[in-house]
Amino acid sequence: MVVSKSDLIKFFNSIQSEYEVYVPHKTEREVDDLVFKKFDPEKDFVLDKYRTVDPVRALFYMPSETVLPPSAKSKKRIIAGVKNCDLMGLAVLDDALLKDNFVEPNYKIWRENSYIISCDCTGALPTCHCILLDNNPYPVEKEGEVLYDINLSPVDDKYIITIGSKKGEELAEKLKEVCTLSSVTDNDKEIREANRAEVLKKVRDINADFTPDRNYDVITENKEAATWKELCNECVQCGACTNICPTCYCLILNDESTNEEFKKVRSWDSCQLVGYAEVAGGGTPREHKWETFRNRYQCKHNFMKFNFDKLGCTGCGRCISACPAEIDLREVIQSLQEV
Image (cartoon, rainbow, N blue to C red; front, side, top):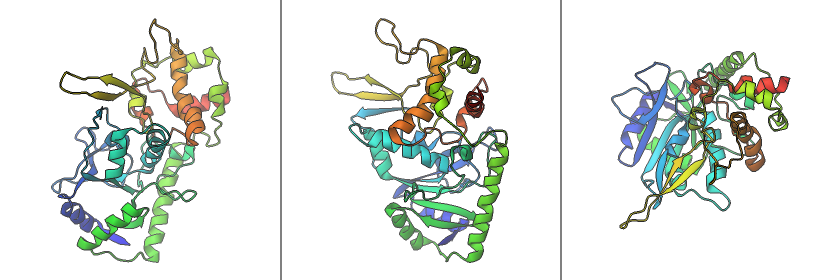
């Protein structure tokens, strides 16, 4: 099916009483920065281009939430314009926060009540490197797994709609009620494939200096303090790299109960902060800064791969953009492979 951009706006406008709708908007600071905000029919939004400044994780695993009792709202949400790097991030969080013996109550509620409309990237930022992780700047089905409810592929002034789930089918029925949908033509498919090839080339060109053939075992295998000290020399341990990551979920749980109410509050924590993992008496498993720095690379490329069979880095490049010391994760990995 194909929907025009004008009809899609009409659809978002028509369902606001039933769903909260979030779409990427340009920020007022810089033209190329996109952030998720509630849909406003009076304001332009951008579904294609590239990923937002903050990961979509921030709409599912918020910086601070009451977990007992859960504070998540029950109203349905549509989050549109999600990029493939964020879909991959949610897949990691699903494994970490919904399976086995631990279920994060708010995350479960947000996931159940949210409908994900992803969109192909049509541009790339200098830090985008999904292709180095064997990912694409557009979502595709892998081994029968589809991570979106609906995906939109821009074709001129319209979008090709691909349905990926029961929730997607539900949204498609509602689209039909207010939009005029047409069939996908061979020409539409050709344009989509040309657009995808073009953005793939952009990301490859951006990362031409880095080898896509990566051996992440070198991170854990390399225990040389001198090597890691050199790599983390400029790190100020601000935690920006973890707070902006689509897959980080370290937490601190505080008891904020009063005489009137029992209340547990979960907040983001960061393995990069001084004092993280420190225990009573001052003991810590990672005494030195280089050990803390190395831990993030191990977590993303070794520990998450072992625990979830997924890499914790999706190639969004946000940690590179956010680092005040301009530490580039791609360069760190490349350096380790060349040691």
